[in-house]
Image 1 (cartoon, rainbow, N blue to C red):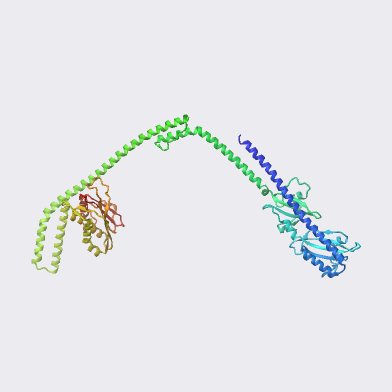
Image 2: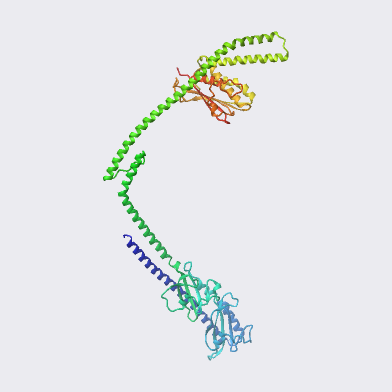
Length: 596
């Protein structure tokens, strides 16, 4: 209802705007038509005056053909609007020119009208070259006594004046054209219509030549609705028409209508939004409270938070709901914290059980290894010693051939190999207690590199050494730690085969995360042995430190377990990072010596 007056005002405004625009366009069209007609009539009057002046000049000149011909040519050259300019005597023969003596104008209408003592203007026709249009004007040549002595005729070229008539600054669709009273185009912006198209049967032409001008909107010769104005040209059968397409003429009205419709639509949607906002202020809070209660039921405390800054009963209800939601969230947070603590303790207990189980499995293996080592020492070591003494004495006493000497050397090397294996078994099963001493970590690494350097050179492997600054000393057993480093480097050389890069680095490190604290709050030493070999899959890395596990055809599976035993015996850790195709990286973390 509130929008109804706005709609009525908009409709009334559109009607008034249409009338104003129609009046303005009609006045503009009338003015343009009148201006064009005035221009054309002045031009025609000038042509009539020209022919009168020429007739008087020829009458005063008398029968001097040379003067007449020169004068007519001068006039035609000066004005440049006459296609032909001729003077004829009473018999129709030219007074001057190439046709002198031939009665060639006697049958022309302009000549007959001039002999009758009249001024004549012919209908418009095509020029001789068919590139434009012309019309003939004529007037009699009179002697001093007033008698007709001949005729002056001129073919007037209309190109110059018609080009001015057709030029029209009236938007994109405005145009003016000239038609005769029989409906033939005499001048038009489209030259193919001139003299070839007749619009006498069209409704627009009938309205143009009618006396009434009450309706200015009509369908033109193109069947397009236009606004037009027309004026007859005095003294001719010509009608000048000025038109503009109605769509372009009323473009301002169209824009106004769009603006009014847009304003009405905007007002409508604004009123709907206002009503909607008013409804939301009443119903919306209850709906939000219902949604917040549903979120609270699902445990979504973030979505259950609603604004409670209203001062009415709904605000009181909001504040009570928020207080209840806050208490529920506090209880849930407390319960979650308790559950998290219990879960953390359970995880820690599980990890400790796993480590205890692993230690138990390893202890069982060590116990089995100890029994095996004791049995081997009892059953094999003594006979093996006797066999070794026998082979050594046989080498000095017996006269052996070359083949026998080679067999003797192989047998003795195998006895030495068996002794070394038994020694490893015994060393792993009953490890010696470390003899602690302050060790220079850098010097310890240098000594280990001296041992493996010849083998690396023989295999074509490059060694890159990286020493960190300010390395603190280590409290440990030199022999055990050196054997562990050499063991790791030899394993790296065996993994690379021919060629590659062995990287050995030592530097200070921060204290690693451990389940059980290690004495000594000082810094740690990190030793890294890295190769560019083939790497190992995860399932092999998990078993590296298990006794008797090996991937080598001739290995015993005790080298890395002994390294692990040595490092952990010094309070450190051993970490392995390896991927197939990317090499292997061993990291030894050892605690540095205390300042005391």
